[in-house]
Amino acid sequence: MADAKAHVARPLSPHLQIYRWSWTMAMSIFHRATGVALYAGTVLLAAWLLALASGPAAYERLAWLYGSPVGLVVLFGYTWALMHHMLGGVRHLVWDFGHGMEPGTRMTMARMTLILSPILTILIWVVGFAMR
Amino acid sequence: MAKEVGQNRAGSMRTSLARVKGLGAAHHGVEHWWLHRVTALSNIPLVISFVIIVASIAGRPWPEAIRVISHPFVALLLILCVVSITNHMRLGLQIVIEDYVHEKGLKIAAVIANNFFAAVIAAACLFSILKISFGRVPLPPV
Image 1 (cartoon, rainbow over the protein chains, first blue to last red):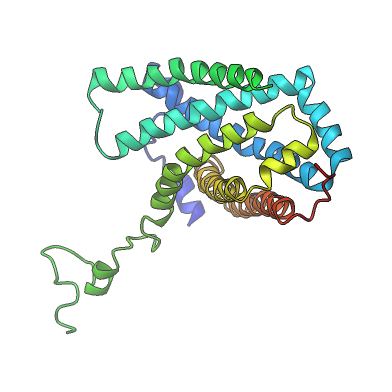
Image 2 (image 1 turned 180 degrees about the horizontal axis):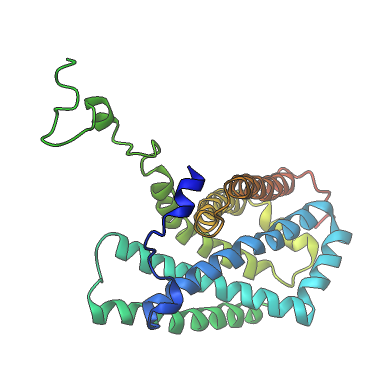
């Protein structure tokens, strides 16, 4: 079967590089990228909860790591990925039900993901620091 | 009965049973797609709760963090959040794997590894939340 397939040069649908970039395409790719980043980042969540359950010594070490400059940058990036993926998810849910597919609307919706996600991220961090 | 098989719809090769099951050629129907959407929906309120919980704990000393998480309502929200996101990410990454990994053996291995990863993350998080909220973590007196 595999050999028979290899001999026939079937037409393939063109891959990404052939298309002109659009907001919907860029945000769709970014949605997948943030999803994969969030996937990997769940290790940070599991480590945080395990450290909490392990006791004060383990938690202090982890809190130091997460509170270091590198840790803060990673966590800030993680918050942004989370907000971006959540907004993108809502957008895709709306599209799944057949709404907002008009040319102007869908581009606006894609743009709003990129505009709102950093705003929400900064808001969360400002509120987070204000509660200290 | 046998006469009707394959003649349930003009031009259709599908049997009556296949049509009733409605699972399509892959025999899985839309389970994967649908659960991905259902968990996307449940993720919205749960992730918002998660962000609020984490923001209220971040930078606090250990006993305060433990007191927040051991509250039944907070623990319940965190448990639901972990169940929802680990399932959502498992379904999501499987789509990514199936899109980019074309070699059959490697694809199966990657999908299995994906399931294992999601299960380990879920178990680690749930165990920790339960251990904390059941008071199995010694807390200094208030």
